[in-house]
Length: 406
Image 1: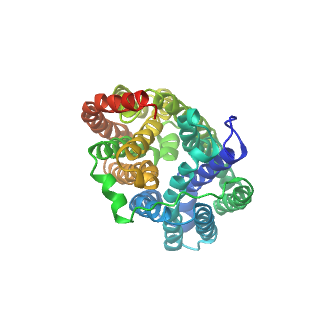
Image 2 (image 1 turned 90 degrees about the vertical axis):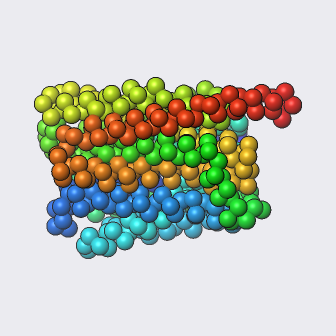
Image 3 (image 1 turned 180 degrees about the vertical axis):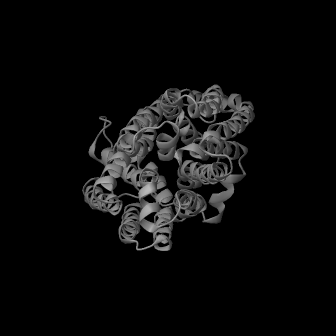
C-alpha cells in the first residue's frame, strides 16, 4: 500500500476524512446566525456549541485513542465514522437546541480519535520522507473544509436553510465511507502495553510543554474565530450576501497556514521545530492585538483577518512531530495516544478561547477579542521558551541514532 507517489488513493481518503471532520466541526461558525434565528436562541448560546464541542472532544480524544490501539484499526475506524454520521444526521433533524447540543456531543466523542487513527496510517500509506507532508496534509483537510466546506455550507444554509448544510455533510460522509472500504489497508498495529501505562506519556516534560503551546495558540485564534461571521458583518461591515466570500478568503489563508506548517516541521526532529515557532507566536500576537483597529478602520480589519488566517495553523505539524518523536524515543507503546495529542490540545484551546471570547463579547464587544487573543499568544511564547533547553538533547539523540545506523 505504501507508494513513492504521495497523493495515492489511501492518502487522499485520509485527507478527505479530516475534511469531513473539519466541515462538521466548523460549520456552526458559518451558520451561527441561521441556527440562532431558527431555534430562537441567542448567537452567544449557539456560539457555546463550539465550546461544548471542544470541552467534550479534548478529554475523550486521548482516552479513545489509547483504547482504540487495543482493537483492529480498520474496523474501529469504520465504527467511529458510523457514529460520526449518526451525530450529523441528528443535527440535520434537531427540533430544538437541546437535541442539537446532544448531537454535537455525539460527534465530539469520536472526532478526535478519528484524527488520531488517521495519523497512524502514515507508515502504511506513504514513505518516511513524506512524513511531515502527510501530517500537514491531513491537518490541511480541516483548512480545506474552511476554504470550501464551510462557505459552501453557509451558502446552502442561506439558500435552503441551515439543516441542508448537515444533509450535505451526511451525503459526503457516506461517499467517504465507501472510499475507506475501497482504499484503506486492513493491517493493524495493536499495542501490547496496558491501557493505563500508555498515559505515562503525560509525565514527560516535553509533552507537557508541547500541549500547553498548542492550547495557548489555539485559544488565541478561537477567541475571535468563533465570532468570525459577526465580526465580518458588524465590525468590517461586509454585506450579509458576501460573508460566504469572506469565509472562503479566510479559509484559503488557513489552508496556506497548514501546508506551510509542514515546511516548518522539517526544521529538525523532536522538540526543535516547535521551539523554533517562538518568533512566529510573537508576530502573531502583534497582529492579533491590532484587530481592535477594525472597529474604526474596517479595511484594515479585512486585511488583518487574512493575516491572522495565515498564522492560525503554523504550529500544527511541528507540535505533531514533537508528540510522535518523543513517544518514539521514550514511550513507544503510546504512539496512538501521541497521535491524538494535537487534536486534544487544540480543542482544549478551542474550548478556552471560545468561552473567553463569549465573555469578552458580552462584556466589552467584538472589538476587544483580538487584544485578548494576543495575551494567549504571549503565553505560547513563554511555553516555547521553556522548550529550548531540550533542543540540544534531542539533537544529540538523533545524531547517535544516525551514527549507529538505526
